[in-house]
Image (tube, rainbow, N blue to C red):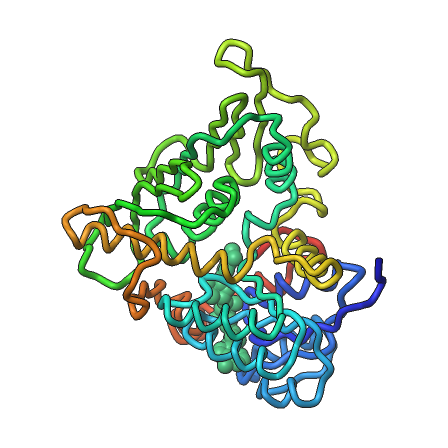
Length: 366
Ligand SMILES: NC(=O)c1ccc[n+]([C@@H]2O[C@H](COP(=O)([O-])OP(=O)(O)OC[C@H]3O[C@@H](n4cnc5c(N)ncnc54)[C@H](O)[C@@H]3O)[C@@H](O)[C@H]2O)c1
């Protein structure tokens, strides 16, 4: 084991950048050494809270600093170019936000530019980073729950890429990260639009697992992983494992998540999303393993969402994977695609970023 401290360079010091910075600050194996953002107000606020070297241009930061982990926490439109620039600059790992990109072409290129150089790419302060879900995945891999048969994902969101990528990522985790064979799906608003919207559908994974994405508003939110010998139910941030073989014998496994602290809600430091994501990128570098919520995962999640829309466009026909036309895109809401200050105005933004920067160290996610 190594006890190397990984040096972090933040790119994009806006609202969400503060949350990630708190995560790095709270991890004993990471140290933020610099931050870059052309927005002078955001940069000043960030540097007051995290006193590191500031740059207005991230190229300069990459040139002058020894960065192990580049952390671009950016709107989606500049993200692909910046991630690729970081990869070409020779950092060891990149942990960006989500959605990672708008088009399949962009996400393919981001994965390729990092993978070909042996750079780990992670994307998103995501539920998939929570160690609780990985404990269940290990239980499934051990065979104790039998075989995964089907997955129900309940997520009503008006942005299947923007926010919905969270649930789709956890769904992939419990499908063993299998490749997709084919999907059918539908859009709630307008199948001809390239803009993000509420979508649902069915995913046939190549390993035979069925997954159903329920998109109607309902009392349920989260995931249900139905196995031959047990069930995992989770609202993503609280969950239970049931074992016992059949419907009548199924019993909740009391204490299964106790090691993560709080049992009523997964809010203890070791179990939070933000801390889990930072720890995951440290483990990638230490152990040479893929990040828990990798760029490859986020690219495949985008492909599922685009697949649902394509199915609707083709009269609800099945869409075979991989999707051939890599130019297809799904554009996130303006507040994710562009700087929030430009979208919501200076006054509204000042309040948003004030709230983000005021949170205490180790406070809840932003
Ligand atoms: N995982 C989650 O739960 C979650 C939650 C909120 C936001 N997000 C994602 O985080 C991302 C950023 O959101 P935010 O709320 O921080 O946005 P924001 O508008 O508050 O901040 C973006 C910052 O990036 C800077 N920036 C833009 N282009 C740049 C470039 N080329 N180089 C350096 N800096 C640049 C801007 O000046 C700004 O300071 C979005 O993609 C959003 O989808 C994820």
